[in-house]
Length: 399
Ligand SMILES: *Cc1c(COP(=O)(O)O)cnc(C)c1O
Image (cartoon, rainbow, N blue to C red; front, side):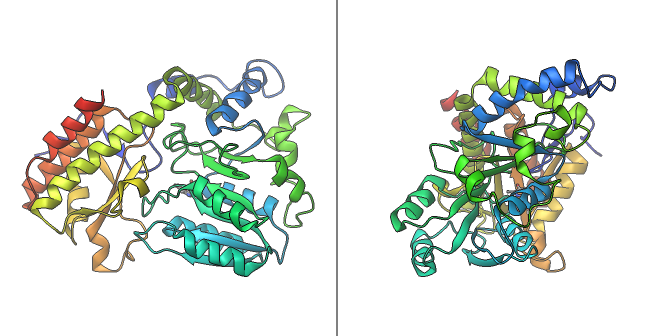
């Protein structure tokens, strides 16, 4: 039998759960793109988009997914033959490096593997050895594959201590509006995000915030083409220039609503909610793994874990069996294990991810954990006791 009828819960790290308020805001007739409700509303987005990022500087929007804003950032940042340093803590850092390299930029990658945070001594050594040539240092705030979180202020401090002039570019796609971000205070020059993760809007809007320093330093970047140029998008004289064409009409109404929801909750409370839900997930895994060492979290130290998504292992082939069970029997879709093993490798079936990103509350996370445990019971996967009680205690003590 199945127990999956009822509202399904997509617990993958993007697209995330869409709030009914966002969907309702998008449900309307096509708006006029030349005057009226849409252009008037869009003027209200800019202060909120800056506030959520923690910046008073520039923001450019693109009709794009995360891969699109990587390229937007790359093309504005670099000229052919420039050098970049990429800090990779998982598949997404490596993919950003590949997208920069494909444009003819000379990329050095510091690869910290699939389970380790950035080693700042290695970063410092690389920056010293470089002698000031890197135009930018690129990193992921949270790598969605490994779910490792990078200490961005510490990275800035290392760059400053070395006196390296590189710009700091951060992919916050998996972390934005989930994990704390203060772009200006943390000295971030370029920040990218996308609509379908913490912002709770369907995939289709990509964001690039950039500092005045980045604007100046990148004025002559020769990879830039008119469509991707961030300048008219940030300083549009006419409405169409924000998008270099037709606006993403309905997404923008959804975005307005999601920004209202974030403002009502307040960002510190949004960040805290994600941290508490993440902690409940981690507590459950600790208890499960106590009874089965094949079960475990990918990132050992909680300080280095993202707050929006958690990568875990169950031992092959149990992660895949469990994902299938939770989706088909109980209506919870968990994330695949991305970048931990090739899909053709049997080990691939030992990894999964639990998202707790965006429009997610205590009962959803506790429900997903209980469903995982039910799946282990049904499939005969051994696990340690007390996980659900431990997760409930985290929630109970925090709220
Ligand atoms: C989701 C994600 C991407 C890619 O976004 P797409 O919309 O799938 O192109 C890139 N980086 C990070 C950190 C992500 O979480």
